Amino acid sequence: MKAVAFKILRILLGLFIASIGLNKFLVFTEIPNPPGDGGTLMQIYISSGFLRLVGVLEVLAGLALVANRFVPLGLTFITAIMFNAVLFHALHDPVGIAPAALSLFSSLVMVYVYRERFSTFLRA
Image 1 (tube, rainbow, N blue to C red):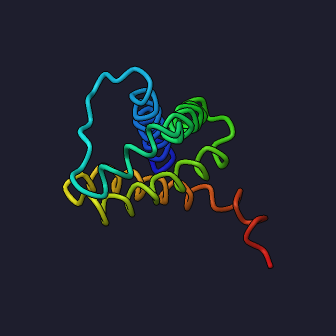
Image 2: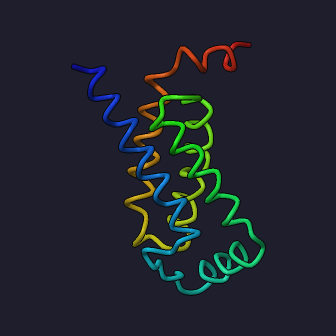
């Protein structure tokens, strides 16, 4: 039963992250810039092309989770991106923190599920 639940979580997380990445290119959901410094920072990310790079990583990592290929690598990228998204929202746009926090929590659960695959990196 647990294995099925984790498989569903892996696929849903992958689809969600891939759709966030695709939205950076196709813009099927308009996301308004936060006010103040957060909006300025977001404009810098957009104009420098950094947000497109993040979008590519999100699409590739999300597809890796859906396809069940290179899952630990995909989780590494997703967890890092979502950690930064949570920090951004905590500091500049607290209203939008819920999806980022839920994604970070889900990715951390999946990292725990795949902890044996990460153990070689964590040995002293």
